[in-house]
Length: 171
Image (cartoon, rainbow, N blue to C red; front, side, top):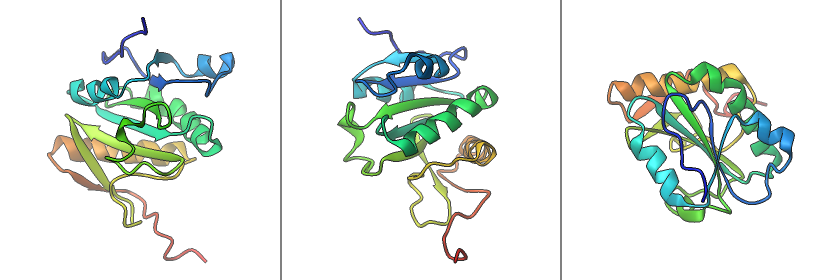
């Protein structure tokens, strides 16, 4: 029997994982609380049951380098955001239930939910539904999660990122 998801406050970082990805013991030890699962139902439960915090879900391929970078950043900020966010990692090859619904075609995608509602973020890229690249800066990701939390608590379904990620001015 696989362990059940922790949705309590003591769970800083929950990891939804199937298969051989992140297979090293050291890597698993770094990823605080591990919940081994292959069921989309448990992802749904994580989104639906959390009442007070933002649910941050990194969908992607666990073996992908970009995902590993994002996972390290998420692990690095998990303790600082534990009062207003809970973080889950979902391998889209092992849990394909959401691939069509959320158009999960990228190697690394981060999405936000609050009280069973998808919270969109205007990053200046035109795609407000998700972040489909790894954010290597810990502070930037913490700022985005905090903006999502503050906006979602006020009933907003769309929040504006503190930084514009459009490529308009990059040469």
